[in-house]
Image (tube, rainbow, N blue to C red; front, side, top):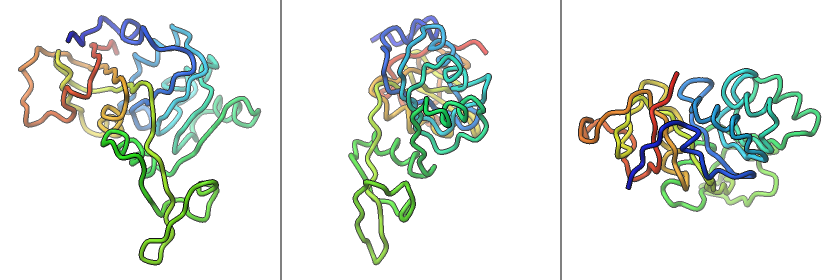
Length: 218
């Protein structure tokens, strides 16, 4: 199976309007910037984006918000994006705010094949509205469901032709969890190396989770 693609635009050839996409990164660290730029070029609309944050006005997911390609944001933090704020207050953007640990676990659960889990985070707040509550050891917990996404956009430091990945420093953040969770995982790497040249003992995401890979320009 050939997983190599020339660039981001070639790798997203089958993404349609109204897709749900996970995007790795934390702030602007470890974000799949080339894949985001490719989406802007492709002009795919009505997207649901699952990401820790919404980028800033001129970078990251902020570029997709500016072109009105995002229908819904599922995030834990959105405080640095004026365009996001404007669209939210004007009722132009659906938003689901999630505690950060819950966001991470919903990603991890999807990758592990776990349909749902209970957590105390959000009990007694708006986060709990409409969710099942159970008591464990005298403490209330909410039922949270694993994410379902059509695609996962991942940024890694190094990758090989088979799709084995290594992340660098804090750029690792949400990327490994989302790489495992996406139905189709598309990866941009800073350095693409031949298969067999990476030490198997330091690979963070094994190739079985990766469907497409390319070397990004940055």
